[in-house]
Amino acid sequence: FQDIECLPSYLALNIERCKYATPTPVQKHAVPLGLQDHDVMCCSQTGSGKTAAFLLPAVSKLSTSTDVDGFDEGLGMAAPRVVVLAPTRELAQQTQLEVQKLCFQGPLRSVELCTLPMATFASISSCACLV
Image (cartoon, rainbow, N blue to C red):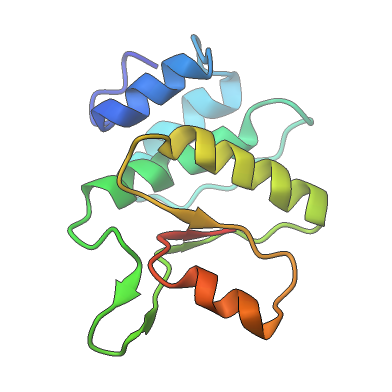
């Protein structure tokens, strides 16, 4: 992961904290493409690093944006910059945990919504990544 030059310093440090030393094959191919704003679709076995392969470019791009808080001042409403859809609650929770690890001590905030009760909508104001 040291070969990836454009990662924000906090993200590079969090990759070290997660003990991601060497990219998996899916990460080796998907991360550089994602960082270059290409659409990426991956199919590989469970545990192959697909979640990080998608999240690393997203977190990096969000961090370099001038609007990182996910709140539209003009409209007075939440405006998440990334929405992650997961087919199960368990996968959404796992993805949220990965987002939290990657965003630790950085400028981004994420929120996990598995159901949408009315009280929950207040929690998405000023989030950049909605899982």
